[in-house]
Amino acid sequence: MKQLLLMAGKGQKTGFNIMVVLSLIGLLTASWRISGTIPYLVSFAVNFISPDYCLFFAFVLNAALSLLIGTAFGTSATMGVITMSICIAAGADPMLAGGAVLAGCYVGDRNSPVSSSASLVAVVTKTDLYQNVRLMLFSAAIPFVLSCLIYLGFGVSQTYQEIHMALGEQFAQEFVMSWWSAVPAIILLGLIFAKLDIKKSISISVLSALVLAFVLQERGIEEILNTLFSGYVSKNLSLSKMLNGGGFLSMVPVVIIICISCTYSGLFEGTALIDTLKNGVEKISKKSTPFTAILLTAITTALISCNQVLTVILTKQLCANIQPDKQKMAIDLENSSILIP
Image (cartoon, rainbow, N blue to C red; front, side, top):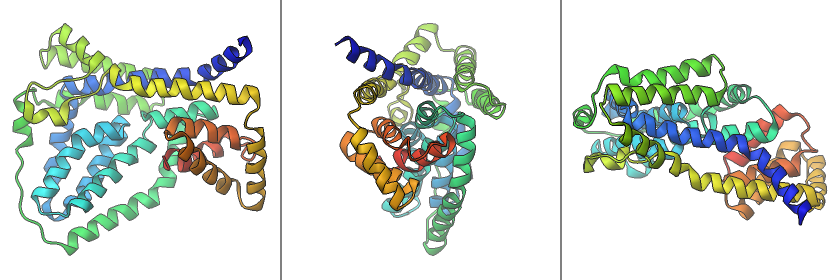
């Protein structure tokens, strides 16, 4: 029993750093809501949407916000809801609009330095997060450009109607809409470009957002603390679907999944339960390529585990011998274990 507990504890050490990052991301999304950062960015961005190219803008704007906040769920709940509404109002096909929104949301979920999945891969492969992001952006360039061309093509081939959404006026009912609200986002981007540790970058951005919430938005300390813990709750029912969410509690289910997954990881490694499977993966690699073996392994582990975290961890363990280069392993995991689940 003692040995099993030590194995499980070893697995938990792997996941501790990512659990800290996840908790900070929860605080970031909540603080950016109550400070007016997300409302300001969203209302500013939608001013650029042209009805004839609404599908293209739906994809690009969701991609931009997801890169900034690193979460597909947070993006779809804010920019996704708004761009979907605009596309429908313009007469776009709901299926195409939904595809554009979801495709945009997942751009940042994979490529953003504040994405939990990017941090997870960096932790399990022991690689540099910013180097991984640079390589991910490079490999995503062609798919991104092709997606833009596809959505532009749909825009040219269909006829849309004029739309008018006074989004800024709606947000102004609850927030002071000032460019100062963009400061937390500007700070985060600046620190990321300076390659400061991601935990410090997020923490500083959160602190700046809290100052804005107190000074600019005139929110009380109790309300701010409640928002950081349980998420933002809008006073306006019409805005609640777009703004509610975030906070530490929103990350608890994911943190629990990571704890359980890392426990499995430690037990599998310590008891050599997956050694036979490793041999099978090596045989596949020799008959094809390392990435083919990693891809097939990711598909299998995703079907078994039904969650992204365990898929990443198990695939890394099973394929460690066929791809000894940590940097290549990180990108191979991003292109398989992150995308497939």
